[in-house]
Length: 239
Image (cartoon, rainbow, N blue to C red; front, side, top):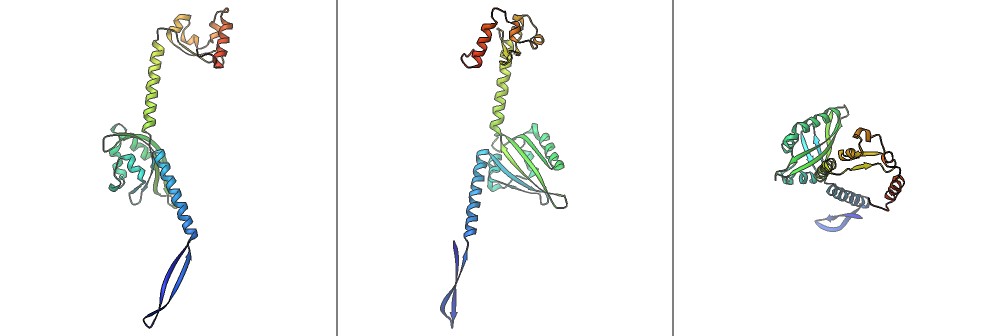
């Protein structure tokens, strides 16, 4: 790639020729192409990860946001980034103290991460994971903070669904009208048992924790039960 600059040669108020200069800009065009590709991939990665970056200039008290940050916080780009002082206005009331505590930790230790819910201007609750690190001047004084923020709402909701499911399972497990036990297939050791199972076999939960199913199985049934266990481990039977 070559960029040309043409200059007229004037003599006696007449154009008598043209002086041309050519500059090889191949390397610059290649650099621009590579930079464009990197920026495009970075933007795509931010969209996929629901992640944006932010930068806080400690000396001038100014904030710079990537476009994704505006989307995460539900703020129009034309309004500009939210100042560090006003970020706390977005934080859910129950987490404001925790959020400020973690920010102070980052300023004192140089790096910190925090998970917290925000309330967007439209009332939507969104969970955020943020991590920041301080960059220092040559004299050791803090210069700016660079960090990332990620929308983790889906992950938090999934964790809550799993937690509720586990709680429900524990309730059903403990209150079942039949004996239920979880056994380590490699050893036959009891892992979890409900009270009904203990009532049936006549052992307490603490005693069952020290036993395996072979110990409490009648001698006439042990061979069949062990064979069934091997078939279960091999996937030949489901229960």
